[in-house]
Image 1: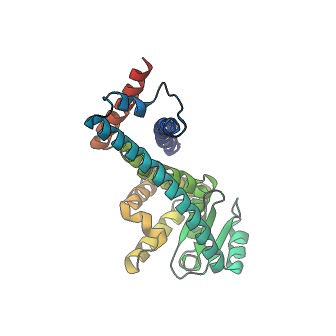
Image 2: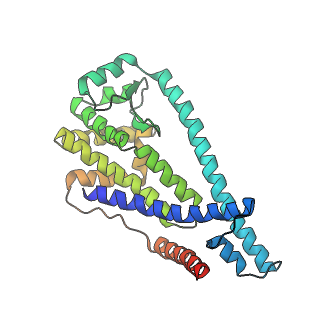
Image 3: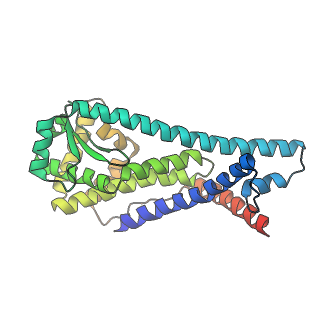
Length: 285
């Protein structure tokens, strides 16, 4: 429950900032392209503070237009890239699908959402892929490595990501953090949301299986495998310290895990947002 509240707060904070800034950018673009008369707009007000045709006026308008152009371009590029790569990745997954193993997993574990596939791959992999209709993907290497209890915990973990559309949420937060790079708190939200969703998925898996043993044992096997072999997709997120928090939660579920903002991120973000809001208030009055 505690992680669910933090997850909601982190997502809401990032979305609130994005809506505020993106809406102002959208209105400014409408003003430039269609000549829409704007009474309240941060970017237009910034430009109006300087005398037209002056050096400062030119520098400010160039900077703001570049900032907006970058945000729009990076957002469009990321969305197109995500769409293309998702289609290619899905085709690749379907070509590797093991129909018999997939049917066996569905029959033995009976996941709530049967949108799950097993692919033929020697590396141990488990992940949730897709934005609109996410699927749980397991590899034959993972199935060979884990016992029944461990595999059940991994499936429940990924089922949580699937049912909560975590792939789509993480992509949205990544998009916000990259397009609004000048507000560091958005990057903090992106990275911490990933951590929180992992902890939530672990919590869900423990509740569904009734024990920490299956998940803990699976994590340790995957970590050991990662040290012996080249890193595989299931271990990618372990490299940034998330596994330490996940193991800590397994050992002591009641111990607080800090999800805090860095001082620099707070200061920069607050100054940017105060400047943003201040300009809007001045424009209104």
